[in-house]
Image 1 (spheres, helix red, strand yellow):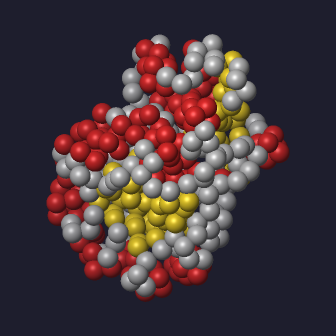
Image 2: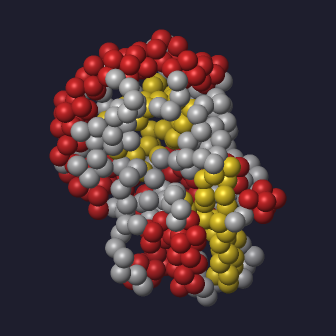
Image 3: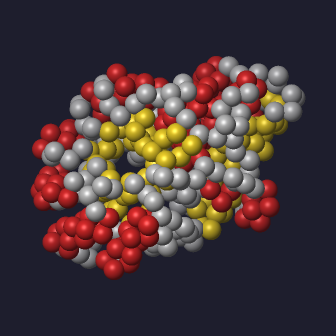
Amino acid sequence: MKITTAQSRLIKVPADEPLAGGAILMGPTRDFVTLTLRTDAGIEGIGYAFFGGNLAPQLKGMVDTLATLIIGQDPLPIEALVNKIRAATIAGPSGMVTLALSAIDIALWDIKGKALNVPVATLAGGYRTTVPTYASGALSRDGLLDNLLRCARTLKEAGWKQMKTQLALPGPTTVPKEIERIREVRKVIGDDIDLMCDINQRWDVRQAISIGSRIEEYGLYWLEDAVACDDYAGHAAVSAALATPTAAGEYVFGIVPFRHMFEARSVDIAMLDVVRTGGITGWLKIAAMAEAFNLPVVSHLYPEISVHLIAAIPNGLTVEYMPWTTQMFQEVPKMAGGTLTVPQKPGLGLTFDEKFCAKHAA
């Protein structure tokens, strides 16, 4: 079997918040670069990448450039193909090269699963077939308190067992107001639902410890990205000072930063983004490294791919369900009883919705 063609598209997905009608983040569109690799055996593999901002056209160009390097190659020895692409670049393990490589790597895993007639979750480890999942994006820092609480009620009524909110400092707010938001959300959802909180690198170490200690009584499942992503010592100081588990990792690229993070004991939970880790290949290597440090792993974005990965490994904790990408596909896994079930179709079990993609192609 040989790769014959590679087709990329820039898809401008309309921004929405379908889980609870919360504030829309990063509108009016979210721009994804999709990739379809075709083979002479009739098997196709799909992948995608995301940059954000205004650089999606440049990312598409990078995907096209790197994909040409594997035309005519056997798609099954993925490690060899990934290293062939890396050897042809001198940009290092981060940035746009890694994002583009991820789209290719994901498509190769999709092909391999289809060729072997097994889901990617089985191919990657097959630890289980269902995984916990949490609602993300509906309880954002951009909404007023009344709307935040309405969304929290909606999620609870829909059967979510885990959900994530955010805090807004620094900004037009105060520490007491931010603590009130956590307190009121906890009142609405009760004590039996896991509540996470994302800071998105907005605090310094002093703030993280001070505010983090004041919200510990509300039993957060984790406090996420409290300080700058590359401040490994700062993360470690926060983790040591708080009883609340800390999570981080979505902002870094490739494998090496996670080694530094784990060696510094920076986090209690590793958060892996399949696009920023270099695709499924890189994601699984980092997850294995986390296991060696006795750390659980959670996913960032892309639930239709992440369900396979969290299900594949023994230290997978939960899948972030922020459905930015789901409109691009004919069918995706849906939450039921707080869990996602791994698709049992070969590969990723995904098919692009061609009508939607054609309508929203740039």
